[in-house]
Length: 390
Ligand SMILES: [Zn+2]
Image (cartoon, rainbow, N blue to C red; front, side, top):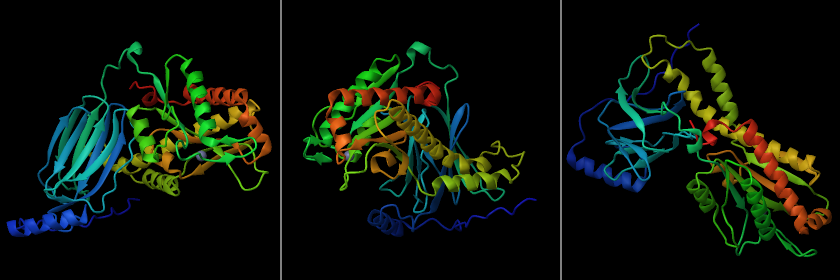
């Protein structure tokens, strides 16, 4: 049975806004940021889907209208401007594709909505528009094509692991008196050992987010990881507790609450919906809504696999009692678009853990164990986008 299609509310085309009013509208937009109340049209949604040969970004708008686009370099990006377009309600998909690294949405001073695709290299791309039809709104589509000739193996860039030693500078993290230890020192030492262990492997580059005793904001940590073009992100911490009994290591990955359930629900719903065979876009519109969520879910799933392998390795090497893998909404993980985990090595508040963490040899073993967990993740699950090749 075919379900009735949901109709989108459409704004009447109307006459062009008089110049005087346009000026007033501009002021309003400046004051209200992205409010599109007085705009000629509204951007309804941005969606992204990944195919073998391309990544497709579809912009739904409530009315047809002009658009302009261009590719820019340093950094490489594709820019699409939609004049006089508001986007008060539009959501931006999280993309973790090797080719299109991020989608951004800007409000320009002249009232245009600007969509920016941050791409990894000079893009082979195409932008075109589609009219509203069959219950679908007007669309602007941008296809970014994957190169047909993958780079030669020796040209592949290494798998980049960003290692984030927590805290630093004025922020010591957890502190214990006997033995006298500070989290910021322990995690920096483990981070350095982990980098050394990883660097011994061919095809792997380990990069330290901080390599000295400095205080860095969480957003700066993420910015540095992005600048390193990290394929995975590992944040290292040590726990503390008011009680002495809790002990052992635990590894966290990002939780988006209900997001993964919503993706699964939407997927099930679409499985039951027939895709029109004559659709000029190969049914892309029908497939896209969950493609976006799948990308997010995919990164989270990879994070959870990486977390599992890290904790399994620590536990198998008998270096720490395992408290398991947990989900949490840490800012430093939330901001990352690559598989990311946060490792708590042990509790400074627990005498046994603290004694272990005070030992340089034990810290080195922890680092080597973590390195084995990460290498196992890479060998088993790292997709091609994480090895830098298409
Ligand atoms: Zn910490």
